[in-house]
Picture 1: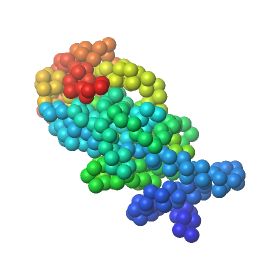
Picture 2: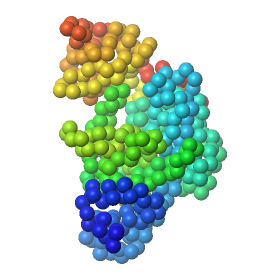
Picture 3: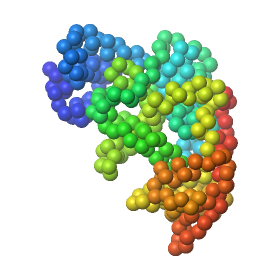
Picture 4: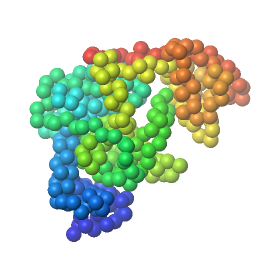
Length: 370
């Protein structure tokens, strides 16, 4: 009766019930399978419902079993330590028979030591295979076999509807946190501009969120009803629905972005689109203004005289009024280090500053393996 009652409630009420109830992974998977049957199209619901539920249950069980923890120690003196810390924990998911793990790239930024943590909390040393600035993906390979773990198939956002039930999972770590499974739902797909010179034309937003306090969400995989991988967790957000509506949730990087560049990442450690200008700015856009919040030390922006509080008005004399326009105009250059003209409002004065960007990858301490 419990599962019937939950499935008949509104989607948000159903998922809140699971989240606040802290269901164990097996119970959560069982409830999800039952509720997926209630969400299925009429044709699917009338054909062997028991078999369909069993197949979904098995697929989701295999998917959750492929989730691992990631523990990283950054290199001493690495610039990313200022914002990400030196000790980092997160999650990843096995995507091929050799144990290749897909995660979020900022976890392994300037890593000195990487460990994969299995669901029974055993640690396996690993090396970085790739870090892709453009998408945010990271690839890690274990140095020893990950026995008994089946890789998950890559899915696609095509045909996924808002409101569709989804599953996300986090890996274990050696700090006492076990692997966990959470139910959520797709609430929007839209462009996302990060304040750290990052942009996706299409990102996945889900709600309710995986707890913002659980660092393991970084790199957590998102699965559809067939146990296929849809995305990799990046952020906790307060506006999952967009349109300035305060609904907490998570942002995931779509796995659709991985397939076209996976071979390139394996071969070279990054993609060609990641070789682009970097200024060293943290910025925001509100009300049609691109405002600088922070300037990284020893960055091209600092060298050029940019300051926190400056407002960027134009890039190469082309007006910009959003982070997306700012980034796209900056990245539309022939070379990562090509000179750029920034028109900024600095205090009460409008200035034109000449900035020589850098290739971001060249400013980072590279993990062994990349």
